[in-house]
Every structure is written in structure tokens, then in C-alpha cells.
Amino acid sequence: MKKETILHISVAVGCIIIGFLIGKSQNPTTQQTKPDAPYQQEAINNILSKTKQLLKDGNLAEAELYFVNGIHQYPGNWALLTQYFKSIVAHAQKIQAEGDYESALNLLNDLETFVRAQVLDVSTKNIEDFPRLFQEIEQQKQAMQDARAGALLQEAQRLQETVPSVEDAEKADAYLESLRNVVFSLNAVEVELLKNAEFRTTIPQAISQIEQLIEKFERHASARENASNATLLAARADEFIEKAKQAPPQSDMTLYYLTSAESLISQLVLLSPEVNNGESLASGLIAKLEATKQQIGEKESAAIWEKIERFEDWEKLEPLVKKGDAPKENSNENALKKLVDLRESILTQSANLSSPKHIKLTRDLIEQIDYSLADIREKQLKAYDVWAISQIRVFYNDYKEALGVGGDKKAMYNAMALYLGSIDTRFLSMPVQTAYSEVFSKFYAALDDNQKIKLSSEIIMKRKEALSNF
Image 1: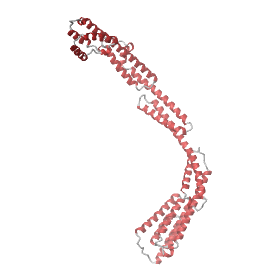
Image 2: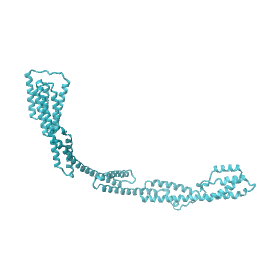
Image 3: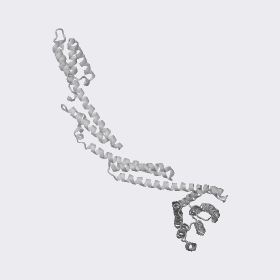
Image 4: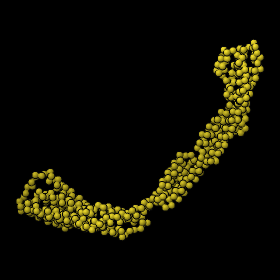
């Protein structure tokens, strides 16, 4: 009989028993109206005859319905109860013989519960027969438990004698599953309740031996799984690297492909100690990824450098950058502004450069621009010195006579504010600063105290000649 059929019958028996018990609990005082004895016996005989034929045909589920209905209709009828008892025990023995020990034991447990519920209905003369029924159930359960333990030991022995090759993945996985099922069932056996004392030694030994086999096959299964995962990771990483090569430079997809490949390779590196040739596989992909990054970096850097070379201001300023000249009035400041703007634009574009070649080209260009900036600034400062010396010379030559006794201090005061007050000493070279200080100190000392205080304030507040004008 198929295991599914056995399970359905066992469930049906359990449901019938539960339904019977619920019915009794809901109507504890209800008494059946007993028909006349001849009619009752005829009905019982019909039930026994019907169930006998059903059992002979193997239709236990329908026989169950007749038995339980008869017991309910004629509570306490010993003939029905004992016949029902025998049919269930016989069926339990049958499914045990077919190897379904768990269903057989569950069936006997349900039968025991059902029989105990009949104690209230049977006549006093049959009460003394109940212990015999319970004893028989217990004996059957004991025999089944021992038989189950023996069958499990036989299965464990068979598995130990038919070990497949660990290289045959399909057979090895099926074998491992069988080992796990057997060791689980053996661990579930309550050895202290078994009648066969020998099982108390042989079962723990079998468990230990099976567990060793499980460890071996799990180790190989894990190795196969790791190898399979490593192959998948490597293939996927290689696929992303190839896609990155084909993607447009500086695109989001390029970054996505490279990042994904790097993540997959990182997982492969962690897995590589558990896989044959895992480290060489990972190192090969790492080298390929780095080479691809460099290739992509060269492409991206070349594209950026193209943009830098195409700057409009670069063509206009190229001669100036190369020579550092500062032609005609105010052209220095204009050139400075353009060079500073150009420098900022180049730095912004070059932030994404990764190619050493193009990084060096950009650095050289920035150094060239910085040189031109410094050169123009130096020319501005020299021009400022020339202008400042001219201011100092004109003032000194025109007002040196005022230093004597009776000199015009007011005119000297106004001239100092005019000629010296407009000079911004921060832009003067050291010699020019010295000349400025000597002239200023000489004339300043000749002023009255009130004039000194007023002149100092006026010179501080006076608008200075800007360096950008040179």
C-alpha cells in the first residue's frame, strides 16, 4: 500500500476517534434508545459482516465508518469493540511491515485513546478484559519500536556498505540526504525504552559512524558548491569587465560595470581559499580589472585633454603664456584675469584625469601658466616701483627747499599728502621702501605736531594707486 494511502487512513482513523470523543463530551448524559434485542443483534451482525468484507477488500477507511457508527449506536457492545480493535491492530501491523513505523505507532496511540473512552459504556463483566487490550497495544508498540530501531540500524549498515564516490555529485547528494534522514531518525529513538538492550549500544555507535560520513560528504558538497559559486562569480566579473570596455568613456554605465566587477572579485577573493586554483583565478581577474581600468582611464583622460586643448582662451593666451610679455597699458591685469580663469578651468577638468601621461601634461601646462602669472605680476610690481620713485623724486625736488627755516610747511604738508599719500607701500620693493621711508621721515619731522597727526590720518584714509593699473 502506498505511503500516501496509509497516511490518509491514519488521519481518517484519528479524525473519527476525535469526532466520537467530541460527540460523547457534548452529550455525556444522552442515552441511546435501545431497540429490541433481536433487532439489535441483527443490526450488529450486519455491521460485523459488512466490515469483515470491507477489511477483506482492503477498504479500511470505510470499515472504520461502520465500526465507529455501530459503537456509537450500540455503546458498550463488546463484539463490535473487539472486532474494531483487532482490525486496527492488524492494519497497524500491516503498515509496519511496509516500513511506515511512525504511522503504525500513531495508529496504535489513537486506538488506545479510543478504547479508554469506551470504559464508561461496556458492561461490568467486560471491564476485566480492558487491561488485556491495553497490554496488547503496549506489546505491539514495544515490538514496533524495536523493529523500527532494527530497521534503522539495517539502513545505517547498508549506507555504510554502499558509499558512492564523492566526485559523482548527483549520487553523493542523494546519499548525503539519506545519511541525514537516518541519523535524524536514530537520534529520535528513545533507546532506554527499547526491549532489546543491545540497541542501547549499537544505536549510538551507528549514529557516530553515520555522522562521520555526513561530515565527509558535507565537506565535499561544500567544496563543490564553493567551486560552482567561484566559477559563477568569475564568469560574471569577466562579463562586467568586458562590458566596461565597450561602454562610452566617463559614462555612468562604465562606473557601474567596473564597480560591479570589483564587488564580485572581492567575493571571489574571500572564497578562493576554499577552492582549487581559487587564488590564481582571483589574481587573474584582479590583473584584468586593473588593466581595463588603465585602458578606460587613458580613454577618459584623452577625452578630457581634448577639452582642455580646445579652450578658446588658450589659443588667445598661448603667445603670452610662452613669452610672459606684458604689452601696452592695462594689458597685464587683463592677461592675469584670463590666465587665472584658464587655470581654474583646467584644474576643474583635470580633476577626473587618471592617466599618468595626461596628468603630467596638465601639470606642465599649469606650471607654464603659473610661470606666466608670476612673470606678469613681477612686471606689474616693477612698473609700480618706477612710478613710486617718480612720485618720490618729484616731491623731493620740488619741496626740499621747504625744509629750511621759514619754509612753507603748509605747502609741504599738501605735497606729502598728494605725492606720498597715494603710494601703497605693500607693493614696493625693499630699496624703494627704504627711499620712501627716508624721504617721508625727513619731511614729516619738519611738520608741526598738529600737522603730523592730521597728515597721518589723511595718508591712511587716502585712496592708493592700485597695482591693477600697471
